[in-house]
Image (cartoon, rainbow, N blue to C red; front, top):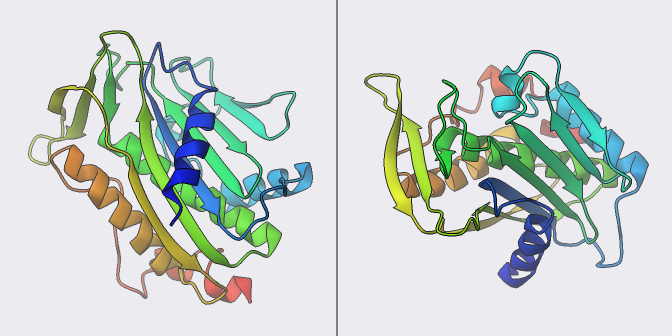
Length: 250
């Protein structure tokens, strides 16, 4: 696994974000066998987004709970899309496909929690889990569009450089069902790197196993266990009805 390349891609992706003002959760996927000079075409980008949005729960993070008023804003560079909503202006999801098989997503809630309260540097475990799932989902959709099989590597991180700012980690308390602070005064989130081999025989459960394993490592930094990510038995309908299943790729 080339963590150096992922770190570079992570740095370049984060540079587009105003993390000096608010924390951003960043996910970066890399289809490792893609030539460095190769870039996603506009058609491939649109097709990959369409596949992810119409056949799976994508995006899976907080923007999905916003009334159907969120819009996609396509920048001058077609490979960058912002998903925003006047109904929840504090929420923003950025999606970008770069060269060399890089897929990057960034999510912020601008320090505002679901109850409307403000907490500088706030990051929820469920938001990070959603970014893991969304980045992996879009990466696989892109791989399908390209006919790519091979090594896939992934990194999740939190970009936050506000002067004198620290992160506060929150998760849902399983007993009360309330959002609760698990750690505060956190100077830095430790990026999580992982990888797996993607092929025409890869099953949805194997993909979910990968997502769950990354979510478990992330949850450890929140002093908990995954809350959004669930791993079912092989025959569960979430897998057999998944349009990205192995049968659909053969």
